[in-house]
Image (cartoon, rainbow, N blue to C red; front, side, top):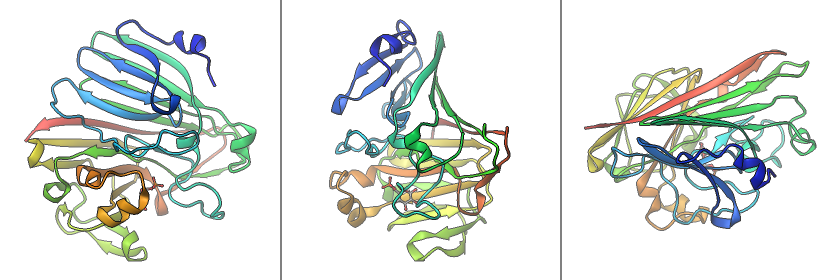
Length: 300
Ligand SMILES: O=P(O)(O)OC[C@H]1O[C@@H](O)[C@H](O)[C@@H](O)[C@@H]1O
């Protein structure tokens, strides 16, 4: 783990501070004249983002989230990498890959008046090679301003072609899941994970009245969460991501997960910008790939 002295080389007065958070875990506390954010070193996991123009945070974090070594945080932006969902061949390996539960290293930071940038990297180790025998350093650049921008760059530094699955598994903060509407996926084909991966087609916008767990395929569209309770729209812009995963657990599943308060699930919606299922990537030796998202809030 990076020492505090090493981390403090990346501290920036009035912009970036390193602190101990829940569970004794270290996070970067980021603030500037337009927004604030928190990023934990474990998982390079952003747990908070709030533009100053917004009364409520854009990103949801479970009040019951565990902050334990090697356990994913419930909420925020888990980075799913280098596979999405269960491992294709080995059910003993962690769901959504290992990036979200490993310690990352801060490798850069910079700021101007109302923009703060921080970069974290995850290099291959013997532990990661045991599950992923490839030389693929990965970095995450997070840009905090009135919008939140994240770029996840994978470098295939080895000699083999690799198959890569990935996602920003983002939990957006909504007023009440029953009243939101998700625009942007009309006409898209999706795999319905609640119906044994049945292949279906979306008609119109998505509204929510039960557990929803879908991988929308071959879509580069922006999505918009319309949230009348919070009087806002959240725009989800993505680049180099061919899938969008839409997930909300509903009451029963949330209760079984153990890290939700009884009503917590009502105030979140995951819209995940991904390369998943049939959209996993083939990365040639030497090739780099960057998955990018930008989130912004607009009044309704
Ligand atoms: O509990 P986890 O591993 O963070 O996963 C949460 C959910 O993540 C979603 O992306 C999956 O589509 C769901 O099937 C899964 O339940």
